[in-house]
Picture 1 (cartoon, helix red, strand yellow):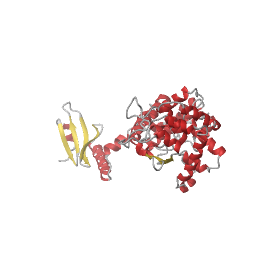
Picture 2: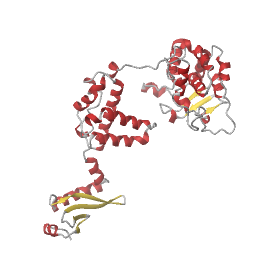
Picture 3: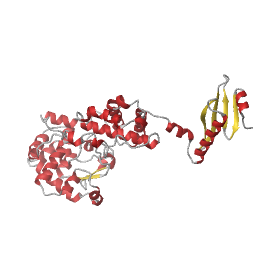
Picture 4: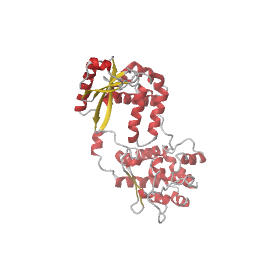
Length: 395
């Protein structure tokens, strides 16, 4: 039987039904509260509707009716209630990080996001409700680092913007994003390019590459071979370190790097020249496809560390250049001294095409032309009879 005001007031401890899943719960202490029991996707759920007498019988019925309407529309009232609950900026940020974690290619991204927000954002606005973050809050957070650490500051701004967009998607915030750049913060802060001190990776002048490679060929060890291989293929150090035998076709002279290991998340083919093949040597019989070519001797199954090639440069007293800088050396040489088209050079470096219209037509990886480019690069780099010395490094 449906409840009435008198029954609610006099109800004994226990559960008392009003119909269609609405119940009055009475504790032994006499405390009364309203609960709507329902099912979503076969799962039973209990939605609290508030205590009596703050919530009267009529109010409880109205709230139950609204919840049933949501259920009929395919929504879960409890989930919607949780989403509507105010969240601090910190709470929303940590939720966003967790939601993104499965899709990040590099596990370090979550740690990087958390670290920058902990260092620069949470102390300022972490406790502020994300629905109440305004432009002044964003400005006060960014201003202290905008000029001193422009690259970091711009990254922080992007992450604040992402957190606020996430809150809007949840329905717990409305209105424009106060951290957006175009048409908003670009009128209030200097453009990042104006304050950014661009730090190029120190690179070897391309005129010195043959002398350098001759010196490198005298160095023994896996890291020295890995460095020579990286330079001659214009690859990124991480691509070299993670290289497996299954990625290499020695007969076709091709190294195919899977999309999952590429910065642009797109498969990349690298033509291998004779000098590069000499560095690889022959694949031993029975070697599995997933065996690392430049695997760590100290940690079997792991690639050599990202500092191992840098250590080679230090032992050569080349502390003024970096491993990544050799990509710039290659780019400068190709652009300044050869007639190869820009798109061939950029393809050799596995650079994405920023212009969307140009990218739409760039369906070829220009592989045959890139092979000629890499053969020309080998000829320059081995001008001091490097080939013989490379072979002496051995496997």
